Image (cartoon, one colour):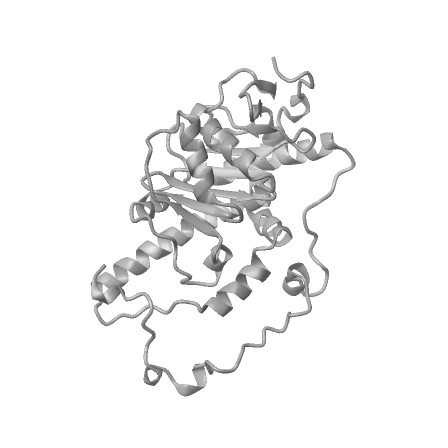
Length: 319
């Protein structure tokens, strides 16, 4: 890294008017210390969090429709690369079953009825779409993470341009802006490359790299992966991680070309507070809704939900 890319140096106080510089001794008063994250962000009517459902069947429909919408949102954002990329969601009734997208179906065409239900332990197809195969490499990655992280309901993985570019450095993101603080001490790097994941061991390696509490992992020479309590959260965090990589690349380039330019990193104290308030599961569910609403309103709920009533599970455990 060139000397101009100093990670920690702050500009001298003389470079900015004294009135704009906060005292390093005085703690910031954020004004929401006694509020929940949703209470803090909502002025007036309190925003709803993750919805509840009267039955597992209704919950399943919601999950599959939102999964299809997340795929379509990924397509809108350019997160496609041939047959690469996959999203999985844990079934709300059968905890050992996960729903995944079929191999070779474009993200922008995905429907709830396209999803395949798989036993995460055996790989058996136990419900849903039986007209296409699942992605074998995707199953190895997702099944390993779902088994290692019972708290994870959904996983997103794709090969994006910014994610792949930043991954070659095998470095975590710096806290360069307010939004990326959602990943403060909550993302990891898998600093190895084991080729296309066709073996269980590589899936377990990625799961170990992700760790117990992280929300995302940068896979060296490969791409990005995020997890969440809902597919909405995992999808939103994936976009945030990708944009974080793009911003990091832009900052690195700017510093490399300007020897006198110094970057300002958000302090640990402020990054931790941002993480606490903005990265709570109900807030992250809400963060995803504007993009998903855009998909529903511009492409039609009927198109996204098509086939959802046919998404049933073989309770005997496979076919």
